[in-house]
Length: 283
Image (cartoon, rainbow, N blue to C red; front, side, top):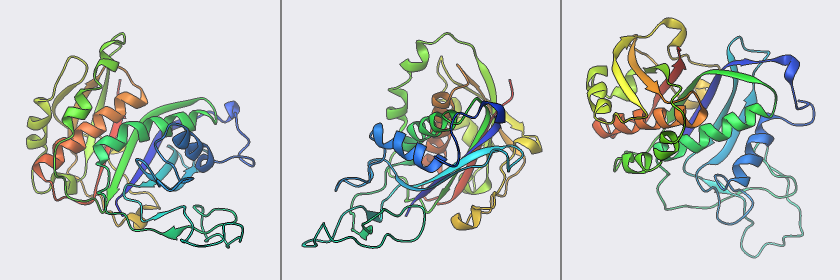
């Protein structure tokens, strides 16, 4: 199954906690919001719409810079339905793990459709993640990192879908903010940061402007968290990255940038299956 592992970096002020972590956790809050917005649905025979829920955890207070993470699957291998002919009144033991249901087990269901492209998933995924984090208190988000695992080969660019939403940013006052993008070597697929920059520069518009290749300070580089062995990722990087100017520092703007970078990279290296990309605000 194709997997996206999204991490948020910054600060969550402990004195502003709005949710009792003993009553609710990031998993339940994120899933509820994703279901409400129609991005993830495990309650019907349709199965997940954009992603399937796998894991989420708040790490503020236990990690120096990371606020939390969420892991989702882009191609559902299991959905919440009962076996044909089974008695819905007969409870089944839930499977072990966070994804289990109370009362009924998730059962394997084949799905022939391709996984949704990560460039389409990232903007709503990051928005949902940001909204869920802010339910817990006042946060200062300084960066986001997405790690992809076992992706299917790219068959087309999603730039048309991404450009169609640009008017959202055209209608906001241009506060302008600068950020750095760090990519691991696997995303480049044997190409260079300069080749990716050239591809991205052709996508510059009045809201987003991709700048030149720059050195990325160590504190802004890609880090491998303790959960990474699950995704089989070893994010080696060259120390180089890309600069970008955004119209605002918001979840939707950061999501557009990450989606565009991944889409551009997958047009020059469509068979890359595993990679990590990070965006960090610098001004």
